[in-house]
Image (cartoon, rainbow, N blue to C red; front, side, top):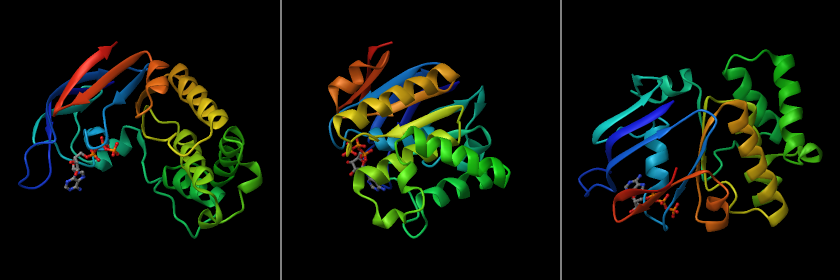
Length: 215
Ligand SMILES: Nc1ncnc2c1ncn2[C@@H]1O[C@H](COP(=O)(O)OP(=O)(O)OP(=O)(O)O)[C@@H](O)[C@H]1O
């Protein structure tokens, strides 16, 4: 369970981007994180992922204060970043395998899990293509496949449907719901009101504050 209590985030000497955010993300649930461009969705996900130290308040994972990214990885907090975070000169499959092996999965299982995850995203035919040769939407789906293959306890997805057609967007939404059913706590940042409406809880960011819309 991921808990934020009175969290403020900001950069350098600039005023805080968000103040006093309190929310709990429970296993088995999907929380949509909404708000206009610049509202602070990525910043809040970065704090949840252990990448950005809050200015105030506390982020905790399973009752322990979250210190940094290493600890977040130990607690299986997986982030699918907005810019996909893939290595462009590796193939789609290699991007997944490297992440799985780094997480302690044996090479043989890593290959199997990679094939399964790419298949779920409709990318079996692209497995051996370099990421830099894939379309924007295919890259985005590869990043999602990598995030799903890691089978996180917490899955943080940052605008991961922005470059997808309707069919693939629905496919990704279904997969995120499956992740929640598997027991993951899922947070999904999105601009899309339809996508947000399909999530059982919603936290809306506006003018530096977070408002619980549902959940
Ligand atoms: N590394 C950074 N250094 C300084 N300011 C930053 C940094 N990252 C984000 N910001 C600022 O923080 C604010 C929130 O940005 P953030 O990326 O979290 O918003 P967002 O809701 O994810 O936006 P979008 O929907 O456009 O991705 C913006 O004003 C942005 O300029």
